[in-house]
Length: 89
Image 1 (cartoon, helix red, strand yellow):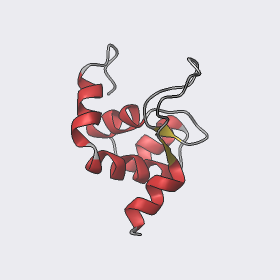
Image 2 (cartoon, helix red, strand yellow; image 1 turned 90 degrees about the vertical axis):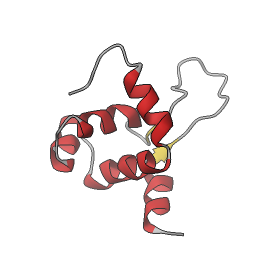
Image 3 (tube, one colour; image 1 turned 60 degrees about the vertical axis):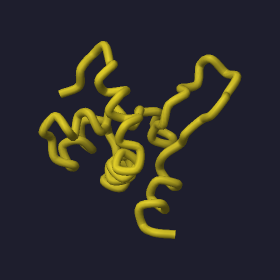
């Protein structure tokens, strides 16, 4: 398993088909609940990984995991960013 996959498995949770309406049904940072699309959107808005980590109280590894997830699921994440009612930047 590569470094990217390791980081994703360690830091990203992707709930599928959960019956609990209070749980997010989108990829999030494990134990923090921050959606991956929010992290990526902030980063793509011109912020460095360090600024992104500080803005959401994440570790550098958690930000890197979100960015790796984005590279593997670009269409899904970009669609979520584009349909967001509150732009992140």
